[in-house]
Image (cartoon, rainbow, N blue to C red; front, side, top):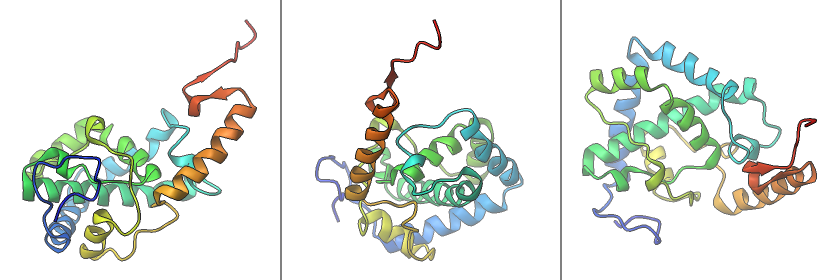
Length: 198
């Protein structure tokens, strides 16, 4: 099976979704059983207070950090387990950087920012967590390889509140950008014209 993103060049074939999903489920169970899991969860959920983007969480309809944060943490953890499983089965970082929906990816960033705890968990479990911006593709779509691995792990259907397909992501980004620009925030939050009274 070749990589689902025609624009990316995978150096190895993807493992079967069933094999990757089974391994991802074992990795997730091990993470959740780790003594540092509660610290990892607490610190990850505190992260949006320090940093959040204009193009990840805000894509969620009626987004609420208190209500949605714990659910997104679960999705981010599952994502990291899937990526670790694919890396373990292929040894290829680019292949293991699975396509992920933007809101979930933002929580993955919050999770990976917990470097010390995540490093200890990774070392204790003898797994490699994969996350690298230079290998991300931002082309997640429903029913692709990521969804197949997710289902094979026994987690059911990816919740579409968070796992937004690329066409819906694009539509919502258009709406957000219009709102941002109406208050002077440009380029999806990359610049603005506020002087703060100076």
